[in-house]
Amino acid sequence: MHLAYPAVLSALLFCTGLYGVLARRNAILVLMSVELMLNAVNLNLVAFDVWLSKTAAETLHSGQALTLFTIAVAAAEIGIGLAIVLAVYRNRGTSDIDRLRDAAEGPEGTDDGPDSDAAASAQAPEKTEATA
Image 1 (tube, rainbow, N blue to C red):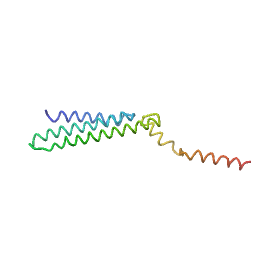
Image 2: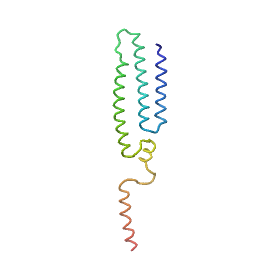
Image 3: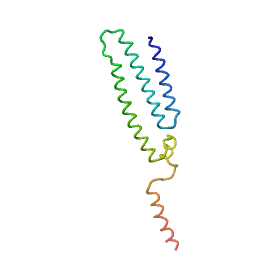
């Protein structure tokens, strides 16, 4: 088999994953797109390892070793990523990335911290006593 076939398939998978990361707003779909991109890299690693092993009789198969390392990293990434997404979903009620970003930033020029309500209520009685 020619090297071009897995290389083209890998490029298509990577482009599909990149589009998913850039265009999707759901955190779960973004994680799935990252997995697509990692699988495209794995396909490239194995394809080039097989292609290079045909030229040398004794090879170390480093492409396949790197693929196993990438699979382990991807498994850890998806486990931690899903745990974070589930925790955020339980706290905020949504996994939409734009809504989470907007809720984290808050409106400009206002202090949305927990002390802002206490400061406002502490200033209100002082104003009423000064006028009485």
